[in-house]
Every structure is written in structure tokens, then in C-alpha cells.
Length: 339
Image 1: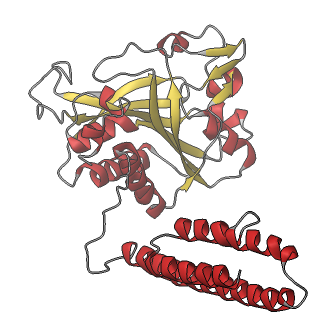
Image 2: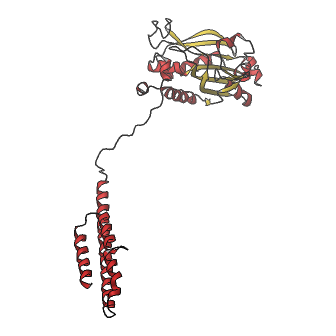
Image 3: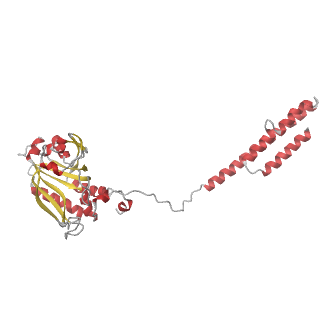
């Protein structure tokens, strides 16, 4: 039995010298030191030994068991260290290599020009006012001097949610809300999405963006409106931008004007974008109607004001020489990457 124990020791030492994996190492441990292992089998046969041999063989068996267990654990630790070092080496980062460029988005052209517009008007003392896109009929029409059955409603075919709830057709309702809650002087713009049941073509969309402006103070005249609009148009299109003012009618302003810019597609010669006119309407405005001021609690005998509404899409089309409004809403990355 002593010879068998010595042979087991030599056999395990030899196998440990050539083992290649932790899995194989575990197989050796089970083969020799497990519950059904060779060393355990020998110890079970100690009952056949004499009383004098039993303590000697027992002590030797325990010594060999502890030795082999220690050698296996030592070998396992060595192999784990080698594996860890190899893993760290494989995962090392070469900081001298160029990094991978992260794809980041750009501002939408509508957002870029709107930000420029905001910078321009803020420099002129305006504040930004924003409000709900779902409006009451009162704020969207009646408070703007457009009562029920008024013919002006025909030009603003609307999306009604309920009888008196509508997707706003303009951002003008914010002018009313501000005038109801703010004493003059007032100087605001209200940008945002608006909705009209328009047929889609190169210059019309049922969803578009509008920027409304409002100034109310003592002594405000049409000259202030004209100077403000010319300054804003040139801040967007450059100092050489050509614009014209035409008499018009809006229920909420009196007198009223429409403002055009020279067609950015044909330079005024006439094309499909400007429908052969050479000019493109970009905004309407005028002096705030006395009824609108009075309805908001502002005395029209003391205060006057002007208001205007600009189509953001048309501003951007002129700025970047874009000839179709639909491009803004198609989300074609090839188009958006140009900006």
C-alpha cells in the first residue's frame, strides 16, 4: 500500500508538469483526490492492515493528500495568472491609434434660421413667448377680430378637434394672451408650428412654422413696422436683400400690408416657385386693430402697436436657395447633411 501511495504521488506530479488547462487540472484532482478517487480507494482498504501498519500508512496518506492538494492549487493559481495576463494583453488599447469619429447630428435648417431670427429680435429688445398648439376658437379667431362666419376664416381652413377647439392656424393667439396679462410696453415674438388644410405643393404644407411679432407702446407707427421688417429681412438675407410692401387686409390689423422678397430661385424673372411673379410673399403685418387692443384691456386712444407674421419655411427657402417646402419634412439625410 505504501508503494501504491508513492506511485500516485509520482503520477500526479508528472501530469501536473504537462497539464494545459484548468479543466484538465480539475479532472486530475477528481481522479486522485475525489470521493471515488484512487487515493480515497486506497484509504478505504486500510482496514486490512495490522494495528502497527495502520498509523504509519494513515500518516503517509494524509501527507501525500495535503501535498497533492497544495500542488494542484498552486498549479491552478499559476494557470489563472497566465490566463489573466493573456486576456489583459489582448484587450489593451493602443492610445496611439486614431479614434473612431462619433456621428453627431446637425441643427435642422429651420432651427438654424429660427435661432438667427431670435438673435436678431432679441438684440432689438424683443422677448420670446410660446403657447399651446391646440387653441380655443376664441383665441385663434374671435379675439383677433375674426368672428363666426367671417369670410377671413375661409382662407384659413382649419383642423378642428371639437366645435370650439382647433389646431392653431397662426401663432397670433399668443399676442392676445400676452396683451391680456401684460401692460405696455410690449415687444414679443411667438414662434411655433401651425396647421392649415392647405394642398401640398412647392410652397405650401398643412404643417408649417410661423413667427408672429407684436409691439405695443405709445406712439408706434407704420414707420416703426417698416423699419423693423426691413432690418429683420436683411439680417436673414443680407444687406442687399430686396423687399416690397403691398397694401392688404387682415381683420386684426388696420392698415395692413403684405411683404414680399425678390424670388430666391429666379432672381425676379419669374419661375414655378414664385408662380411667374418674380416675388415671394413671406409675411403679413400692419397696425394692431383698435378693437383687438380694446378687447385685451388696452386703451387704443393711448397706445398703438404693430404686428406681423412670418412663414419660417419661406425664410429658410430664400436663405438656402431651396425650391420645395416638402424637403423640410421628408427627413432625407442626404438633404439635411447639406446644412
